[in-house]
Each structure stands twice: as structure tokens, then as C-alpha cells.
Amino acid sequence: MVDLSKQALNIEDLRRMAKRRLTKALFDFCDKGSEDQVAMRDNRAALDRVKIMPRAPRDVSTRDPGITLLGKRHDLPILIGPTGPAGFVWYRGETALARAAARANIPFTLASTSNTAMEKVVENGGGTQWFQLYVWRNPEAAFVTVQRALDAGFEALVVTVDSPVYNNREIDVRNGLVFPPRITGKSAIDGLLHPRWLLGTAGRYFLSEGRLPAFSNIHIPDEDKAEATGYVSASSGSFLNRNDTMGWDYVRRLRDVWPHKLLIKGILHPDDAVAAVEMGADGIFVSNHAGNVNDTAITAWDALPAIADAVKGRTTIIADSGVRRGSDVLKGLALGADAIAIGRATLYGVGAAGEAGATRALDILSAEIRRTMAVMGVTDIASITRENIRLPGQLPVSGHG
Ligand SMILES: Cc1cc2nc3c(=O)[nH]c(=O)nc-3n(C[C@H](O)[C@H](O)[C@H](O)COP(=O)(O)O)c2cc1C
Image (cartoon, rainbow, N blue to C red; front, side):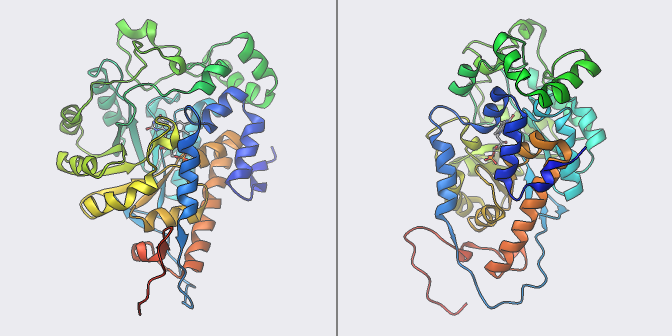
């Protein structure tokens, strides 16, 4: 089959390809944020406001975009963050993403709301894999999932703390989307209008597993099974409405049972970053969840400088939300992150063309990172500081550096 993703020049091209292939409901789920899309726009605006301050002339003929992250060497300063629907947009899409990440030698994070069984993703994906955890209504159920992730061989546990209630995703309610997917009049028409997804993804699941994709990686206690459908429109009492009681005491219990690296995802306040370090976390994700949760949340990029001032060097700082270009990655590093997580960019890639599309997304970002390093005048990631960027209203420095 012809791999159309090779023709993509940038992430936006992959986004358009995914849009053509996926049902409207599924594409909107991947592409849109909550409520009025304000936080999503802010994420882009915040990155666009940051300007690179180039240094030239410099010998930039040898450039190394590699980093050491949580004690391991990786070839790029990025990782693939958790996105629940990877296995819904492509047959075994999680494995496709994991394999693309392994080939690029960057970490991959499997979302707890994914479809392909975690053991299979570890086995068939290879590379460095982390597992992301949501805590559902019954907090004890999470410990069963965590034990399974430990047995499966994940190297890090990423505990997402920014979603105590289900996001207000009006677009999904309007589109009639629910997870796990159900066949309704609306979804059947949407599917028939997108035959490549219908046959290539839904059809393959039916043929191989006799069912549409479903959650395979969360432990749902028997008493909650009846409620564990209708994820997108989860009412406040539903099992799938996440957990609104979780505090640091609970996270500390997870720390006690997880012997490997533990990261806290969804930190935006410097005091919470400090609390994470004091609790014994190995890292944090500074993130507003791509604008999916709280439509008025501060952006990671506005939050980063104060968080870096508070904890840089004491923990690993990963940042995400809105990254579409290699230059965005370098801006995030200059603002204080040690690495940048990618969500939609690789999700568009896998939605457009599976593993080849995810690989294309990473190739595009890699080429852009290398090119931007050259025009910035830097040859390695460790030397990037706030001196490499200018923020709005900030005058150029005078100096002799
Ligand atoms: C469709 C979609 C699904 C996501 N699912 C999860 C998830 O299951 N768990 C989680 O912690 N974050 C989830 N995220 C958030 C991402 O991990 C990440 O924070 C965000 O996508 C980064 O922003 P970007 O997509 O603009 O790169 C999801 C994001 C998207 C777009």
C-alpha cells in the first residue's frame, strides 16, 4: 500500500490526513479541547509569543539533540505522551506508536484508557515504555492496574492528577461519541462516510477480536462493570468519572508500591511541583492536558519558568500541550523543561497512517529540532537556557556572552 504520510511536510499535513481517514466523532475527540477551546488556543499563543534569540556565527556542523532522561540516553529531547484513543484511530495503534518511539529511541507512554492489552504493547512495541494511570471512582482498583503494569515491565508510572472529574467535552456529546464505541444510527453513518477507518480499524477489530475496541488496561471492579460504559458522557456518579478524592496521601501510597520511576502529570503550580519532589516523585509533567480538561487553565509555557525556578535540578521536568514544531520543543526546553511530551502530533500521525504515520511525525519533529538548533546557534541540548529565548516585552540583553 502507498504510504501517503511520506508526503506530509509538517504535522498539520498529518492532521489533515487523519481528518480525512477518521470518523468525524473520533477526529474531533482527538483534535478538540473542552468547552470553548480557549486553553488550546492559549497553548499555541503562548508558544508563538516566545521568540528564539539566535547566536551567530557559530560552528553548528555537529549537533546532538540527544538527552539523558531518568538515567537513560535518548536520541531526541521528546517522548510520546499518553493519548487514550491511539488504538481506536488505528488497529493496535498503541503498538504502532510504541514501535515508532522505539525506532526513534525516545520513550512511549501507554494511556490507561487504551485498547491493546498492556502486556502486548510492551512485548510487541519494545523500547522504553511508561504507563499512565488515571484513578477511577474506586481508588483501590488502581492498585490492581499498577501491579499489572509492574508485572508487564513498564519502566515508569505516570500518575495523572489534573482530572478529578470528567472533562466538559461538549463537542463529543454533540457528536454522540461514547467509549467504548457503540453502534448507533449516527455512528454508523459517520463510519460509512469513512470507509478506510471502518474497514481498516473497526473491521479488523471485529474480524480478529469479534468486537469493537474496548478498555483493556483498567481494572473495573465487578460492582462497577454496569456503569463502565458511556465514558465520554460520564455522569458525575459514574465509575468512569475519575476520582475526586485523590490527594497527596493517595499518591504517596502509589509511590510506596511502585519501585521504579514515578512521575506526576498535570502540575501547573510551583508549590505542587515542590510537593511532588518532597513526596518522592522522580519527575513531573507541566501540562494543561492539551486544553482538554480545564479550558481556562494557565498554559504549561507560562507556568514553566516559576516551576523551573522552584525544582529544576531536583526532579525531571517534562512539559507539554500545543507542540507542533521542533522549534516549540526548543522553546519549551529554554523555558526550563528537561524534555517535551508529544500528544496530538503523533496521534495525528498514527490516525493518518499507523506506524508509518507516527514515524513520519517523529521524523518531521526530529528534522525541525536539528534545523532549529542550527539557526539558534546551539550544538547540544544541555547548553540551552532562557538566554536562548526572549519573552514578550523583554528587551534584548546587553552583554558579552
Ligand atoms: C485525544 C487525547 C487523549 C488524551 N488522553 C490522555 C490520557 O488518557 N491520559 C493523560 O494523562 N493524558 C491524556 N492526554 C493528554 C496528553 O497526554 C498530553 O498532555 C497532551 O496531549 C499534550 O498536548 P498536545 O496534544 O498538544 O501535544 C490526551 C490528549 C489528547 C489530545
